Length: 125
Image (cartoon, rainbow, N blue to C red; front, side):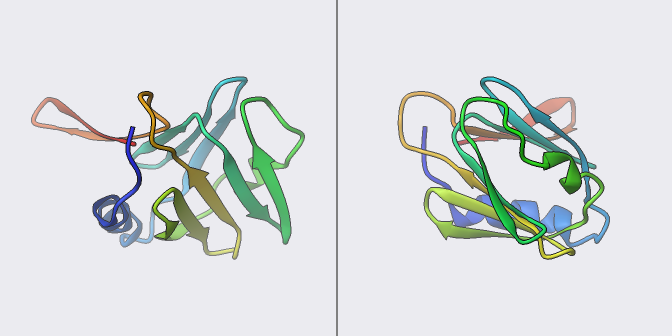
């Protein structure tokens, strides 16, 4: 679809600013990687990189033996861009996760936020 922009960073950081936005669950599947926070979910179909406990891990289109569960219950502090195709989230522990998108005809990353006035709120990259 499209590359990341500063608007998605600002929106996600609004959720992180309440100091209560933690990882509720991580889903690692054959064709998807999902991160569910307390208030919103990120669906990924491109590569996901993580720094967990000082080690680097990668998910790309298949389950891995990486300790993704260690991100559970971690409190997110900040979202940032490492470039137009890399969305980064930092946690209070110092761990981080980088989500990749690419420009093509298919969705790479979908952010699903709480509905407003009965309408679904999504950002698609």
